[in-house]
Image (cartoon, rainbow, N blue to C red; front, side):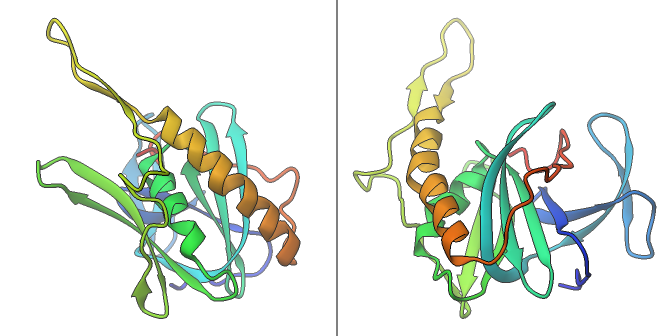
Length: 203
């Protein structure tokens, strides 16, 4: 992937189905764009990152809420930031129990149009060139169903996934956070900052 470096963790966000690394100043490879807040940012975009999963944590950004932080180690540490209740995080957590933590995994975000033409945001995990299946699936009798409210008087229909997100937090985030602490030599810094952004990792 070409993100080799020494020192602290390299933070990566996800934007429009691709991994994003942000720089304070322009680089030879970076692209400038204007984010939702009107700020010009310098970024490089990447299809995937691969390494062993060594850490999982949840921290709260003062402006943008709860973030899921996934730490992947190659010859350096990458920290992938996702909004905890996003579709990126949800699909990652649904697959994580099928990951062999002793082996490297490739983390691949994706954005595509679904059958109705709406944007679908997801994450694929690969090990040994095999795309892992979801451990928790719709209609499996374990994963809760989201609630649906039919819009009235011209209002939009609304789906509420809070029960699904709460289940994934308790069933996946908590046990895997503890498991990784026990088996990994990587210690997540207590004061690890979160770059955060209004338009990275939101979906």
